[in-house]
Length: 379
Image 1 (cartoon, rainbow, N blue to C red):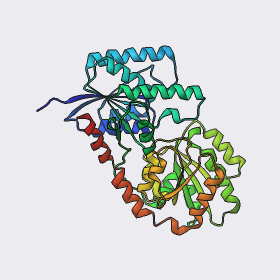
Image 2 (cartoon, rainbow, N blue to C red):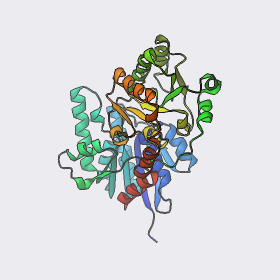
Image 3 (spheres, rainbow, N blue to C red):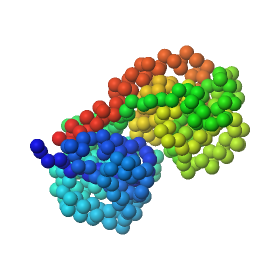
Image 4 (cartoon, rainbow, N blue to C red):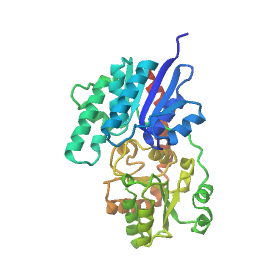
């Protein structure tokens, strides 16, 4: 019997997010009979809690963070170089821009046999000063050259990566995120878990619009709330908008809700453990992000059969088709409002998406398919 392969996963941040969830799914999902897994990340966040529960070896790299700090980057680079030379991993699988660049160079110099980099949304697509974007593109390109294989999670990323100099299709693997089967709570139970006693005071014919999102500027929630105000001015049907999640923008969003007189219409429900199991509380799902990779929340909403209004950014168009929702430009409250009005008004648009939409998610974006396709690159 051949010995287990030693695999190191490296990611910049350990907070709860899509890239971290992908690392967690891989580290806990691949066979322990075939792989000896270790995870390295900056900070001490959600990812470490999840890996500890599954007895996966995980270590924090104190100087590894998203912000650019020259001397910290040097320290992290030499730490990684020393680590790779000492431990001799068979595979180093890198996630996120900073960890990708530093890790790919260190792994090459240490003679690691297989270096894989997953691009969770290219950072040079983010709105930044031109010279900053150019520098990030250059670092991203160098990372793709240093890695032996590149995983992209969206079709847009595939095209952008293939357009890079010296990068061939043979080097790129399109492997989107995947989700497992979800046990959704029944509608009424989910609504009560979300809003507690307040849920009972909401009329039975009220349409529930919802989202699962960090309360950060990049998620564009202020535009969704502004759209809610536009809808309310001429709404024929009663509705509420419920946001599941926490983040640094909470106070600003609370003020916006008060300023727009939406206190009985928009609810910030806060963080909910296993939030995806509550999706049947909603009739419509919305995701108004300014940028995205391939959002898990949208996959889960699709699995729940919810019609969706979502920004036309990143990998969202890969998920949301004509049969499952409406794409809108980012940062456009009027377009968001018009799309939501259509789904609110046309009740018949809410049900037909359920079966085909959920079936498509199960077939195309399953966790087992993601694991299988990724492990095939490790061999």
